[in-house]
Length: 579
Image 1 (cartoon, rainbow, N blue to C red):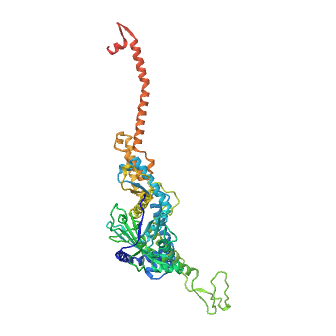
Image 2: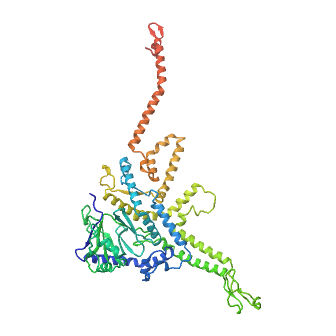
Image 3: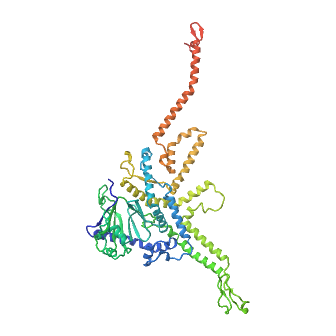
């Protein structure tokens, strides 16, 4: 029987655990406060739909985040969306393979039964990711990662979908890192309505008519009794490594990660909404770039701030300059009080004022609009460079209409991808690796994986990332292999012995792995050796068949010589052989 994913209790033996949770929650949230003002401005310039919590933290008011900044140009929003979409397509696309399970032992990876088993496991993992909302959550994660430098999402077990992802946004969570300098703890604050609290924690999952009000605070029960079902309550959560963890044990101490949820206003210091345990880390918190011992990462939003500010300023000036050119301020005689500046409108003017008319006070040169527009374009291009939007849209935005040389396009693409190498590695290790381990654990404990070959029982399953961006990094080395093999092939035309230096089997395996081709397309080594042995045997038989007529002719000639009588009691064959 599969072990339960989460072991959950709702109360602590004493108030020490609640005291620990409160202290750690406050200390972790204090780490984030220095970033709130910066994130507030970034959100206003490139993602105004987020984040309500940032507004509350920075302004102390409940209002829409879209009201915090006046936007005059939406290019920053589009640029970061292109970056997030490009990262999703390049790192973890739903429609392309982006990972491949493997073992640390390369010989076992090439063993045919193991290779087929790993391929089947990969297919099940892809199906599990597709059935959940992982890819929608990943898009949000990449967007936050690019803008704020840090993102977070929680992958929770779900009864019907196996898993469901909860993307978090800046301002509602904080993280800390472990000894390996990777995120290992997460604290967050979120709201739940009275109806959600009752459905999730009060109602008995096995008996819909039973309500356990001792699991929530008095305020929740009062809101429910008074019909205030949508009243919100603040819930806090702390996810951290389990200090009592003992590998291989059953129960709470056998869980590597623990999670505590409690109401912010709950007066009972022993009462929790849930104390849960997890076998692997349930959250992912990837960071774009870290400096020194920083806990939170530095994203492209911070580096693009000067250009995003300049863009809004220049876009505002561009609008003002256009307004000045189209509807300039005017002057005229005092007798003309009301003048309509709309097309087709009539303004009555006395005959004596006809000579003066209405004149503009200041007429802006038309060249000013072009100059300001050039500044706007410069700011847009600078933002695209910061967000790598120019990389993801390189072919679409390429100047000229003539078809480019394929080799030139490849070289351009490889040069650009070197800029994304570091962030690709960090996203793989802090986001996709954790998600892979989490989903693999859910499938394994759910009994959904095929029976593993005996040779790999108890071995750790690793992951090899084969996404577009990861493969692009690997494929940069394939061109070297192709050039080397081509050189040896040309050399063999004059000196055939040059081919003896090349291990063709090793070259094929390396090329197959780098290209991300499916494991089922490469034959088992035993099957390959059998095909070679059969081919060698067929070649020997063909060679023997080709030599058969010559052997028959020799036999016939010997028979004729032996029958030729030369006199003296001997034949011609004997005389020729000296017999």
